[in-house]
Image (cartoon, rainbow, N blue to C red; front, side, top):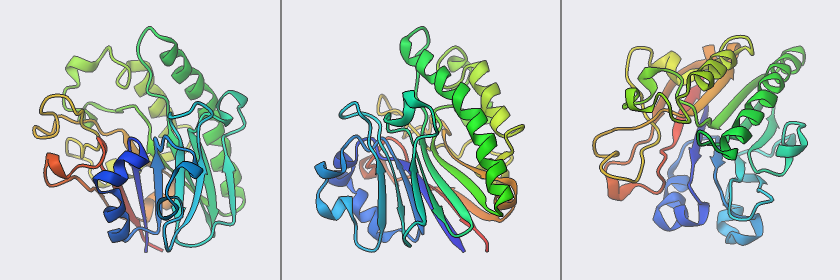
Length: 265
């Protein structure tokens, strides 16, 4: 079995103070993908940057204190690559992939966007460039007999079942019709599958992000935006997927929760 977790830590140094380290020590995951690390590796304590028993690869953002992704693996990766060949996003701290035997695992932090702003324009440019890259990555992997898993914070809720207050968010970034259609293309023409939705086809959620404002977490008014996007043969091997939701608000160490999936050999 191969267990893989993904979580937006909302600032790794802050998450460490709230419980991330305890979670990592207890996890049974073989691979952990992190997003929104918000720190250069040399800004992290040694035991956080290179936790015992893990091989850690980082892609920090050139803009200090923003974005940043990482991948932790139990075994040493065969190769590590930052970015996806588009110069605007090479140093943006938004994409990192590592090669393991027979599998490429990527950590993605897709821009969040805000309607009517440059942030939304950046998000749209990222999406336009990333879709063909994903399709090409799948094709190259298939030719080499490999699978691909892109984990991370996609910052798009695909379907109404993926967001509790969907009616109120139809004109907001993250649930715009064009964003949802784009994600549909990822899960269509690009050849990937939404692993969690495959295993939970008839339920709302399971949500993975809740605003710190109000009582969103207590009321489970969340969004399902942290995804495992897998090539089809790998998706068919998924036997279990779940959100590691904190028992209560005080137990949260990020505004996201880890999303974990187990893949059969």
